[in-house]
Image 1 (cartoon, rainbow, N blue to C red):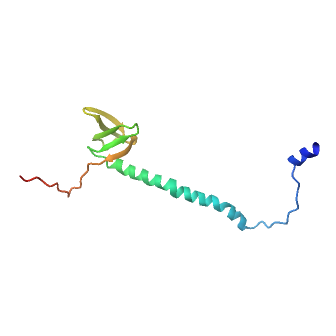
Image 2: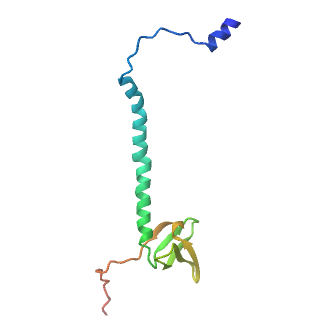
Image 3: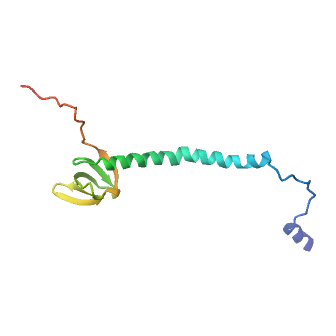
Length: 126
């Protein structure tokens, strides 16, 4: 019984060749799968999220009165007042119901009503 127990807990010491302490291709090949996995994760997960965050920051910087937004709480609202020096935005969530929310709690700009200055709307002629 003792010899069986010793066989499971101890490993025999095999003779090894004198190893050179230099660079080996085997060490590089063992790291290569981890580098490849990081590259795949970066391009499939991290990079698209960074692009989406950059786009949201630019949309929040360009908020104007009349824009429809979605808050982090799931409330769809219309922007009524934007303070340039403040992080607060006044939104209307129902007719005559206005609340003040932080700019950071706006998760999506649904529609933007900003119209370029050179666009001309056609007028009806009777």
